[in-house]
Length: 383
Image (cartoon, rainbow, N blue to C red; front, side, top):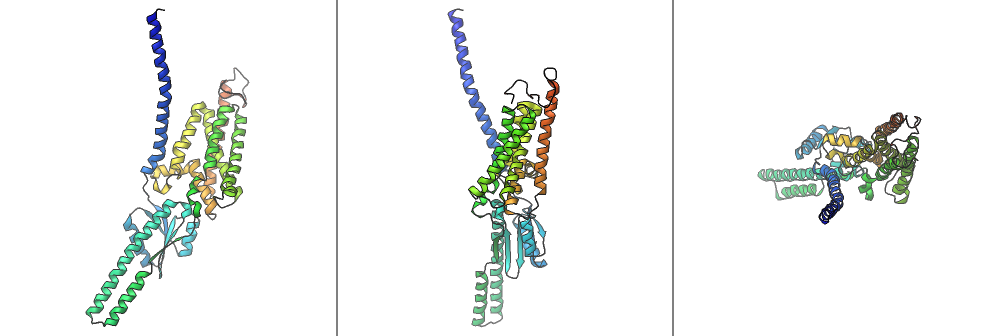
């Protein structure tokens, strides 16, 4: 090899070295853009609609309030009529509605539940403010009309003064009151983050079961152990240690453990069927779909219908709803959420077993077919 050829080869090696150094940086840029888009895009699509709300009160007054609320934004609330204030409070505590409006002789009362989510509570407060302004204007107009009518009919100065005093007394009394019947307290902001132990434990358990454990039965033991630990430690951190959420420790531990197992079994199950690519798909589905669409960043009522439905059915979205119910809404039905997590767990474990059988048959010529056969050939340790 002459000097010219050596110089060309040296130049190609240098170029290849620079390319290898640049490619990881470009990959990081692509991944960061993908994650940022996945989490920010739902916020840009946020448009509150069809928020379930109960309305109680006399028919005529109730109809006027419903019209006043609908005038602010026609599809903002999905109104349901209930018998009285007690029925409205019960509906909120059972999470059948997000809030309520109660009309009575003393005025209008908005019932909110900040524990269900500060975004919806803020919307209800804004609606209450808009309605209060409208009622105040109507009262002022009625007082002015009464004053002018009395004046035209020759009312005395004392009578006119009485009308003004009555009007001022009525104006001083707030026509709309807001009551937070299920308060999240100072830690209401953390309600959507209580599923973090399940999310982190589930993702790590699923990924490590694929990367470090190759035999399917032992892989199941890995994710079950990780889920149990995540549930017990997560509930301790959220409850006794930092006192972030009220409620029963063991119920929280069971819910977090079930959520972690649902996530890890899906990741490990997809990995068992499709190898490391399947594992990656599972991780990305949980991170890029389940987390931003599951009501964690933005309330489900703010997301488009399809996005909200899919996010709510994912393990992360189910966990957000379940943890809120266990912590703040003990009267709410939770069978649907437990059932959803159970289906994810069953599906993931079934995928692990199916993957074990498929790969065992493929490797039958090299090893005896059994559920203890490695799933990915010689890649990684044979734990």
